[in-house]
Image (cartoon, rainbow, N blue to C red; front, side, top):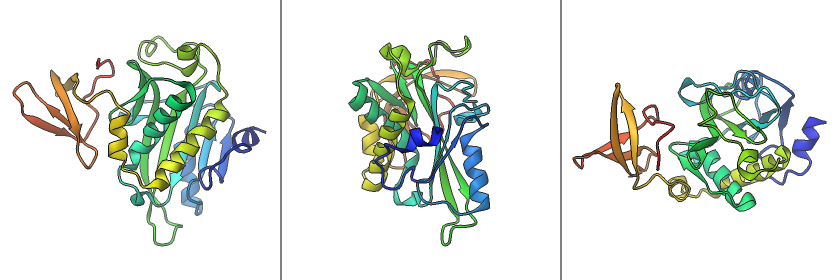
Length: 257
């Protein structure tokens, strides 16, 4: 029953055509990894959970949802090297979906969080894994996505940083319908071979803004200048010296821009 609701109106060609739906699981990324170890999977296989007890975000952070208020899924990509910077794909696709379907001013925080104002609506975790059952393709990518949809509140420890679509728009949303629209946009972008760096720049508010960072215990104010061709953040310090950051570890979630 749950699977039918997610699949019956799906308009994609490959993404989600092989679909696994769990009423509850620890982590959809973990389920995808386990299945890849057992057998080959078609390109674009998707693992969805109605609730998740041990989800993971970037930087080792947890992403849990013990109630069925979030969109939680993992997408398996067998040939990710056809698209550079594929880790930017889910955030770009979500911003574009929300802007088109809800008129929402969502934007991307480097590298792939989705915010509304300064509060986090979605997080993404991309992991490369060994793929022993796929001929001529030793690695696959698992793209884990968590989107806050129908929560009316959050635990106090994250209440000021997190936000849901329902809190923003004042109404509940059909999670399955958003999943279908979102996955369609992800597939379109993935196979279009569009430049994801250029698209990311159209989805962010960071460029030209000064942000507060913390590295090795030292707080600094740096200006965001651009992205490199590899997808690294280029910043400028108070003396005009440029820095290139490969990790988002030092960005403060409360940074205003």
